Image (cartoon, rainbow, N blue to C red):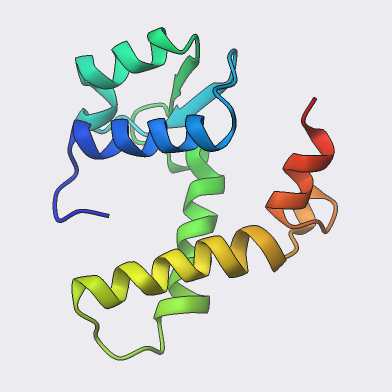
Amino acid sequence: MSNRKTATLVCDALKMALFRRGFPEGIIVHSDRGSQYCSNDYRDLIKKHRLTQSMSRKGNCWDNACAESFFHSLKVEALQDEPIMDRENMRRAVFEYIEVDYNKTRRHSAIGYLSPENFELKNSA
């Protein structure tokens, strides 16, 4: 989480995701067309780890529907009724929602009513 959308932010996030999953290769990494995802640093990181970059078509939110759905859930389920928070409390609330509720316990109809964590465990080689 940062106060600016930068190449460093998305590179750090991608490195963290790769580390947590044991540096898999051949994975498709999808994003919108933000400048941070078009940066040389981000594209070099994708090449270094033998990933495939995928980007939404210009102006087409449907290409990124799963991310749009996630952010809707985050807002409605975790943030909407909360008092205005400072950055550190917001960071904690978002972390708890993602790492405790969304990934570990929240079941999703699109993946057979499993949590994302259980779905990934079940479907990874």
